Each structure stands twice: as structure tokens, then as C-alpha cells.
Length: 582
Image 1 (cartoon, rainbow, N blue to C red):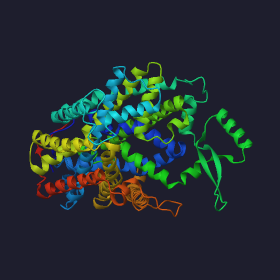
Image 2 (tube, helix red, strand yellow):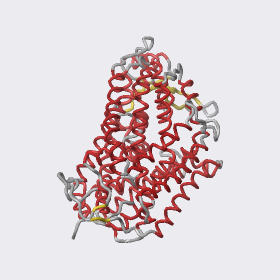
Image 3 (cartoon, helix red, strand yellow):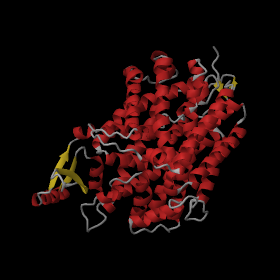
Image 4 (spheres, rainbow, N blue to C red):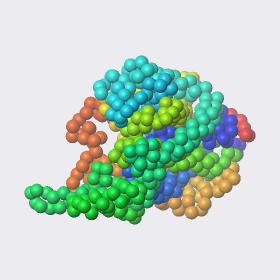
């Protein structure tokens, strides 16, 4: 049988590796990961993180690479077309619609965050980012993105996000218009090395800060690293007594975690002098028994590797049958892990700790750490304007590479479903995503639209798509045939142990993650407690209905419905030309 490849293709192996790594390396590597690691116990979180990497990260990644490359040999590049072809059943096309809906919906709000990064880089370069407190930085961020009122983010000044959004939106579509090799691959070949160089420069600066405030010698980089990575936690608890029942209870103080010999000695002295205080050490095993830790680790793996995004299956469809998907997948994953664990994990949180202490960084989310804490830290740091510019510019580069990866699945889908060329599909997708981005930016109060779309897409749709893909690979295609597909042209082979992992453990793990998420976030139950506590996203929809939240969910549903209608009428014949050998 003659091997056939799509008309578009990657120019080199390093190009596809950097493009896939670029789709994975993003804001989450430098902001979300450090916060999650610190929140869930550092060393304990890393154990759960690497378990999730081995059970769902690498297996789903390899499955997507193999499935995508096989679909590409038939000239198909979209998730619906590939899943329908590889299973031999048209109904699987409709499941593949999820793989187009996810990246399109994420792009609608991710381009907004991309504009934040460029805006912060420009303002640091101008030397105007001088903050003396986190509140100063928070006030600037709120005004910049329009967090106080719907419609207030549409200004075009240098301290408003509107103009930067316009620039990054045009940049993304210019690059995607140029095509796979001349646009995405060309940009990633330069952006990824530049990003890593900038990250290493910032890392070196952070690691040489020592204890920048002589009044607080305990606030050092070494203690900051300890706060994030220590396998056990030492926390000061306070006793309280219920006035009605007289029942006693112990709860950790807001700034109760202590790190380093000096802080521990001071905490021991406080506890010895006050019977209502008690210093406790929480070991790694105790932390690993927390179900929320495992959910957080699995969620971070989805974010960090772009598995379940619908991106890898499209990117790999442009490979030839002789390309090594096993090694390429491993290389892209390793690049991402280096950026996340090796750089992001050593930079952002320790820097914040060194200037603000535990109370200044504990519990900070991705946006709080990245756009409130760190700008203030850079303002106080010697040479801070340069390092602030470098940090936010590297975030901008990471955001562009990720944004491009989110657009390509939609381009490929429109080409196949509507039988149109790339220029036409770029124009149509541009209109769709421009409307969606405008929606997210307009409903900027409390970043409600962004938050709502992110919650439902990343927690619901991504897990479902990952589960669908691993079941297709391990059960519909068959695990042996799936491994044969992956090993075609491979320099190394996937260890046989992963046959068991990919057929049984990966689906079970994903089902447990999904059921646990539904149990806690949707139904409101809490592990170890009889009290219901609904997430704010459920409250916004059903308990205290919020217009922005409802419209955001409607946007997801309508986008999915539109793509489903196109799938129903599409032919998905693919664009084939004679065999090419790289």
C-alpha cells in the first residue's frame, strides 16, 4: 500500500519537537506549577505529579502522537476526521469535535492573558512599573485588565489591555496564516531557545538574591526553596474553644508554616510559652493521603503537557510514516519538564518568598502570583525593570507558541469539514475567535468569563477527550496494534510495561479523576466532611445565577454545536499528494 502524507508538513524533527514543546510550555509552567507545588506540600506534590506523568501524561501523549500520525497518512489533520478514520466509524467524528472545541475556546481567553504579558513587558521596559506594595501592583493589574467593571478593559492606552490585545491577535493570525512550517515552526525555532535563555538568566539572578531584606534574614532564597520543596511541613496550629459547646479544635495559623532552623526555633519557643499554640510536623505520607493533592497533580499534568487539548493529534498528523513519534514525544515532554520543574519551580515562588515571606505568597493563585506579587518583587529588586521585562517577555513568547498551537486544530478542521483552503479557514476562524475574545474581554469584571470558560473546558472537556483517546488507542484500535503504530519509524520503543499502563491504569486513573472532580466541584461533597460546599462555578449557574457565567457556558455549548453541525455535513476526505520522503 502506498504511503501518503498531507500536503503541509514540518521541515525538520527539531521543528515539530519545539512546536509541540511550545504548545506545552506556557504561563502555567512559570506561575501555576510553583503555586500548586507549594499549596500541596512541595515534595509530596512532586511524587503525585510524577506518578500522574507516568500514568496519564506520557501514555496519552504517545497515544496522541501515534493516532495523529496515522490519520495524517490518510491526509486527515483534524481530530474528528482522524478519530473517524482510525476507528473506521463515522460516529467517532462527533467525539472528535471535543478536540476542536477545546483549543478554540481556550484561545478565546488565552489571547487575553497573552496581551497582559506583552503589556507588562512593555511597561517594565518603559520603566513605569514601580510598586511598593502588593496592593499597588494589584490595583494596576485590576485597572489594566478591567477587573472592576464589564467593558472597562477596552481602552487602548499603554496602561490598558485593549491595544495589546489587538497587536497579539494580529500577530497570532499572521503567523498561523503563513502556515505550518513558515509560520508555526519558524516562530517556535527562535522563540523557544530565546525563552529558555531568558528563563535561565532570570533563574541565575533569583538564586543569587540571598536574603534581600536585612530586617528579615529568614526571608532567603534557600528558605523559599525549602517552603516549596521540603517533603514535610512544619506548621504552627492554634487552639480555639466553641463558647456554646466548649468543644476544642485546632487550626493552622494564616502564616503558620515555618521554614528553616531559625523560624522553627522561634515557633517552638512560641508554642512552649503559649498553651493555645502547638507546632506540628506533617509528613509526606500524610500529605499523599489527601485526594485533592492527586487531583491537583493530575490537573497540572493536563495543563503542562497539552494532553487532551486536541493539539498534539493535529500537530503529529503532519508527520511522515518514517518520523519517530516515540522519541519526539519524549523529547517534547522532557523540554517542557525542564522549563516547568527545572526553571519555573526554582524561580517565581522563591523570589516572592524572599521579598514577602510566606504570608505574601501562600495561597496566591496563578494570577495573584504572576501579576500582583512578582511585579512588586521586580520593582524592589536591583535591576528590577530589566528582569521584569525579561520575565514577562518570556511569558509572552511562551503564550504565543501556545496560542498558535490552539489555532491550528481549528484551521485543519475547517479545511476538511468545509473543503476550503487555508486562507479561507484562517479568515473564518479569525472571525469566530475575535468574537469570542471580545466576549471574554468585555465581561472582564472579576475575570468572570475567563474563569468560567477555563473551569468547564479544562476540568470537563479535556479529561473527557483524554479518556476517549486512550480508550480508542488501547481498546478500539487494540493495544498491540496501537504500539505497532507508535513504533513505526521509531529509534526507541515504548517499554512493554506501558501496554498495561495505557490499557488499564490510564483509563482508570482518568475515570477516578473525573468522578472525584464531579463529586467535589459539581455535587459539592468534600472528602472527610459531611458538609456540602459548592464551588463558585456551580453557585454562579444555579444558586446565585450570574449573567456572565451563564453566557460563558452558552458560548461553549454554541461553539460545540456549530462544530458538530459542520462535522455532520463534512466529507473529511483529506488532502493527499504523492509520497514524500523526508
